[in-house]
Image (cartoon, rainbow, N blue to C red; front, top):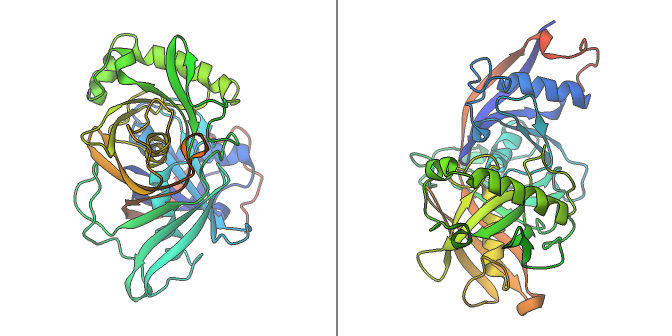
Length: 367
């Protein structure tokens, strides 16, 4: 029996994927994941039978619902659906898809629009952290048109401001889950950090790289992806994440000098390939490691207070506003914010074939 679901397809930041209200999907987790796999068409590397684009950046799903968390408007569950494999990973967050949550929640009537702009407080279920998403709402209606541009997306759109309030240590319980700002993994100095996204950072020069290589060059560099994967798995154990061979976290990141004292160059892996631009959560993590002393990515001089950090990536840069408190070893980042954009592509019905489910779909959808 075919399942028909309401669906909104959005470009959110530099990612794209379907947005669902939680009640639109099967309640049971197994059936929900099977519906998402069929929606994306992830069984094939070229997903002609679904909405995916054959890339992890276009195989993402956002699930949104009213929040029961005090002070929060909506819950956001992110799902990374596999490419060429039937898998769904809900351990990480995605900041690019997060940029579409505010507009989606307002247009779905989950949040009342203000006149001019509306701030939606989002509770990310994956990392149990809060983010304020500020959307442009002239005349109390969402607008996607505007003059803001982000590198990696053609054209201009309305700015969407993401302010991360408590993303530090959200997954592992500590910004530096190993208890150190620098560890040794397979003879290399690395920084294991949990700041919006668990990551393991390495210096480009330690890998024989300049750090400005194009993603396609890194993807085919002999032995690099395999080496990063073995480092990632060992770092996952050190970070308390267990066996991460079937998870996309922690993400490997290669860092090098930026173009000035307030910037850093980053190559972010998804983890099996180098990101063509950069993840938002990854940018928060890289900016955090840059702003704090004692990491493989630290700025030459530590500065307390507000500062703008530019994370340079293959298609441009992401400007992250950070606020640090404390001196040296006691220093911490207490807030980070950046601008993204989003666009609604279509709204309609998505058809899921009955044979997508391993068992007959007997569980009714939630009301």
